[in-house]
Amino acid sequence: MRSGGIFILFILLTNMFAQPAFAYNRLHSQGNEIRGLEKTIWVYEHEHGEYPLTDNESTWYEKLITANNISPNWIWKVSADGRFPLDLYGNPLVYEPPSAANGGQVAIRAIGQNGIDDHGALDDWDSRYGPNPGYWYKKDWPAANRRAWICAVLAMIGLTYIVVKNKQAMARFVFASLWLGLLAGVVLPFGFDSGWVRSSASIDPKWITPISNIGALLLFFSIVLLMMHVVYMAWHRRSLRPHGTLLCEKCHFDLRGTIAANIGRCPECGEPLPEDADIEVDLNPPPSP
Image (cartoon, rainbow, N blue to C red; front, side, top):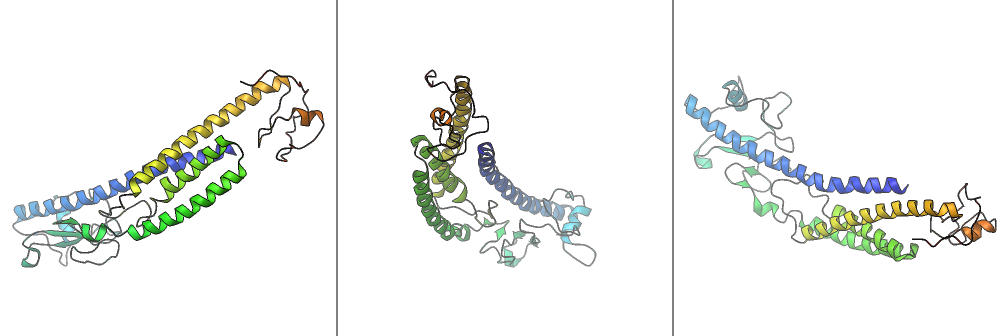
């Protein structure tokens, strides 16, 4: 049971570091694609004397492919029919050839999560300006503040429960570190936009990064301590068994007197004795290391 819990915590810790890296790669990929498409369109105009435009025969994107200006597999995500490149949310990228309305520049926009072309405002990502920092800078702050208050309440409840249920100081420290690490390192930074996959240039409140880093360290060290404790207790029990000493699996109470009195449960916590507890009892074993 303990090994399964340690494995789950290890997976959570690994996921915590892997997902932000994956999200960054997606965002970095989208930015590169938008800038790459813009350069490809300029090359097309230089070679053909006109900009690619959608007509009855093909789309502007298909014209780039037909002219061998771009590979069909270069874009990270395209529509099912292969006629349009898509953004992270599955919306077609908007393309505008140079005109007076866009300052004589090629404009390519990812219209963002709301699915509406805001012409570079709100959650759009425009090739001329990049993401809109004014929109993204504080977009997720209210949700982060609410989640911080929830985590604070859960932390107090969890710490109270851990102190009441565990009498050993080491156990209190390890389980308190695990609980605080999960809240600060996993729950608190989780959930911006669609989970770990954050949109465009979404910027977290400044206090989230140091708190989540501290939570990750607490989670890591508490898992290491828990694993060391499990290994030590397994070795300690094995070293005591030849001398007739058996410890309770739940609270580690010395069961020599309990076995000698032919009692079937631990007098400290009520845990049933193991089936192989009918060993010969030595009331004077060597001191534990």
